Length: 301
Image (cartoon, rainbow, N blue to C red; front, side, top):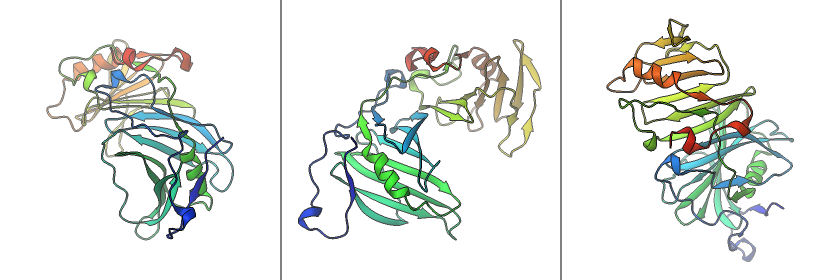
């Protein structure tokens, strides 16, 4: 059963006094790992409820963990929501603008904010609560051009109420085989994520703020420059066709996936041959998620 979530008004009657936190919700802070290699599972999960469907997306970075759900039914049908749980002590600030209302999640005070761009051309919403001392969690709905659905707030409150401690083991479809000394260490990688788009998986690994490895089950893609220009295959490496955007991006067409490295912000630029080696040595699992790699194995631990 999902614990009750209620809106409160600005008054402070006896009924409005916050109650002790519901023990079924998040109450213990998530502690940041020293390395992504130390993460075997998410620190939370989203309890199944009739109007939410997990979309399989998740991410881990230096400040938080996140997972995605899709709304099923009602005016918000099909909307994607992102649940983020911050590590203890990691900074979080609510938007300063927007229309806000106080809420409670598992007996804890929180805030719901609806945002609009200047001129009203875009709309978004965020719900945030402090689930433990100096530890925050949020549910957010990304920017859309139309007005926010009338039931979005209640759906987001329901998603917040469904957040529970403990998560499933993490698996990724890509294993890093080689990491030359010219590139940042895998132990110090900044973030990793898996998402799904039109049925195809997408995988990202940021080695630091400047170098990012990306793989997709959608094969045959060209390299796309930062200006939107497309760069078709222009070389072959170990029998794999490759594309290159000078100083920005390199890609290889493997048998099971298209793989890329973005390095536009890297200074100095890593050797191109080292980038080719990293891409060619990536191990790609099948589409069956049961064959995917745990993070320590995927990152060469």
